[in-house]
Amino acid sequence: MDLTPHLPALQVVVPMLAAPLIVLLKPRGLAWAGATAVAMLSFCIAIAMTIDVLQGKVFTYQMGGWAAPYGIELSVDAFSAVLLLVVSGAGALGMLAAHASVDQQIELERQPLFYSAWLLAMAGLIGIVVSADAFNIFVFMEISSLASYVLIAGGPDRRALPSVFKYLIMGTIGATFYLIGVGLVYMMTGTLNLADMEVRIQEVTELNPLLVAAGFITIGLALKAAVFPLHVWLPNAYTHAPHMVTMFLAACGTKVAIYVLIRFDFLVFQSALPGHSTQFASFLMPLAILGIVVASAVAVFEGHLKRLLGTSSVAQIGYIVLGASFLSAAGLSASVTHIFNHALAKGGLFLAVACLACHYRDLRLSQLAGAAKTMPWTAAALVICGLSLIGVPGTAGFISKWLLINAAMAQDNYSVLLVAVILLSSLMAVAYVWRIVETLYFGSTDNVAADGATDIIREAPLPLLLVTWLVALANIGFGFFPQLPISLSSGAASVLLGQLP
Amino acid sequence: MELLGYFNYFVFVVLLMIGLYAVISKVNLVKKLIGLSIFQSAVFLMYITMDKVEGGTAPIILAGMPEQIYSNPLPQVLILTAIVVGVSTLSLGLAIVVRINESYGTIEEDEILDAD
Image (cartoon, rainbow over all chains, first blue to last red; front, side, top):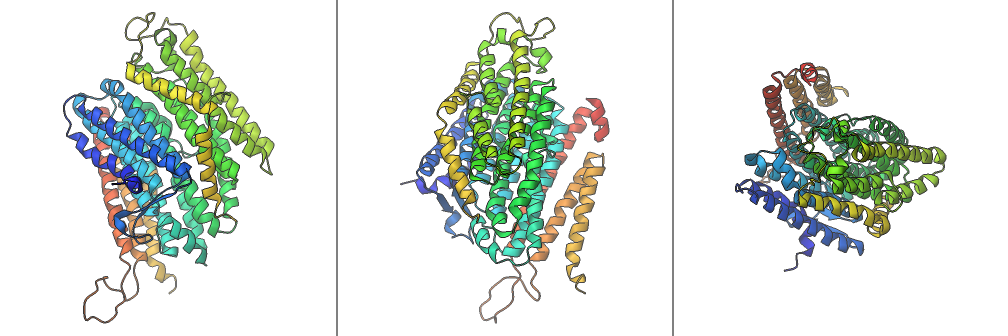
């Protein structure tokens, strides 16, 4: 039997059905092994679909055989393929590396539940990406959010609880705003299928409800995506979550919301509302620039390693939104490439943080001084991913910054200002990455309370370290051979702009 | 009379704002969750209102009945799903509040901030 046409459905169904079964695997290590196998299978499905998408194929799947627009449709094009790779890759590699770190942070009897929640979060995020139905996206968004609240609150740190409560409140408000927007569009068009909506929205004559809907959907998804100034839930949630959860969510959690935001706005609203593309750009561009500058500046002075990296994520989200607000093919493909490359860089950094946390319980920078002497391999991987975050030539981060600067130069207005902002924030990234490097390599070890001696080499467990290095090398690999993300993202840009006049 | 026709939508907006106000202004975490619940319920009202067709009945096709006007059943189904989502969010939120109470001994936001 040929499974290829069923891949979009399997991509969601496999982790979702496996999640409740994982809870039953009580013996030690079995839950982890099962969940890793499922996550890997999901990653393989994503790779298989990406190979077909690269050849120009677009997957569409009618759930239960009910034809769209009456049934629920799944579809996978170039834009979805990038996100699928990021989500299932982060889920699978994180799971592969997670065992030691989870053993350290989660009690044994709760581990099956933790792995199950991980798979549910993954299924939810994947579901958002493959759905071609606005309401289905809402349901999957809530599945992934509920699972990630559970994951964040699962750690030993009690400060995670108030942070996750704040995240829950803001996330639910965001999702409800999205729901209001979808309701208003449904009211005017009578359809929930995105492709069908795109066609029927042209016949709508009363445009005010659509404008309101666009506002609700943009704000709601910006809350979920932690676009500045709606990012206040993010730094605390990332700081106090279990380390592997931080890695998983930092790599893909917010990017999926940006995916929905870009897809909804470009495909549905910009073709129907005259002048809406300018509104979209002039609303989001200042927020993106402010986010880039302010969050980078805050990160420079941050004293806790995880909070520093979390704050830098807000700035990186700014880059992604900035690229989209250029409204050009070059800007969009820079933005989509940055989704991919930032996931690599930040995922690698947080994996290295998880390695460090194996021996350093306190992740404030002052407590990490001289860590490179005890964990040389971890520190080296952290430096590589840090260089990629800055955008040094030869790393993946350089490719997307380069594309973004090129796209900014092609803008008619403010192009010099935009380039200056990007360069300035890259300099600030140099500053905050250097602070980490300086502490790790040259810090004095006098006041450090590590577990055990600080002058002998005590590396992180091998699986965790290997995955960290795999991601670090991928950062270099995609820096020299960026064809995969670039061809997918230019495909994504042409999908998004296909409907623009 | 035109305005009265939009009565349900006015109620929707008022409920939405009451909920949002409670979420923002209350320091007690349970009261925040009550506000969140009101906020979500307001949206249910919007969906239920928009599916009503004047003179429409339940969409059940019976043999021998003359052609009838039916209300749109789809938003009701959607809201059934959204209610499930709302209930699970609320219960997860309450579970988190219970754990906050266990580890901090309070559910007042300002006291929690002071504790750390």
